[in-house]
Length: 113
Image (cartoon, rainbow, N blue to C red; front, side, top):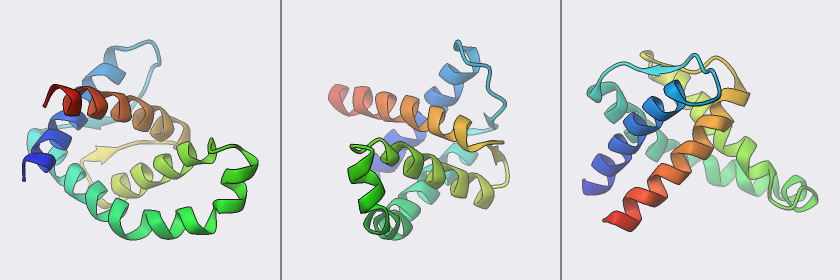
């Protein structure tokens, strides 16, 4: 349960960082409950759909030296935004940016843990 709370905090922090950051983004997390739903949805997607996509995309990942993993992470966030109605990300590029910042915030929060 603590892991989900940390991910929820990471999603809220990431949403704030990307809103006030250099890149103008038009996505939002409206409440703590929505961030919690996004964290749970991403956890379910990461444990069910993402491994299948990673296996299918092994040749592309090898050719791009792993950079295609950013696209896969973006796709999982786009899928989560389609499932959770109050979490809106308009494009794959913004989802990739969100996933990069989310990865950094998750790393910082887990190191501080």
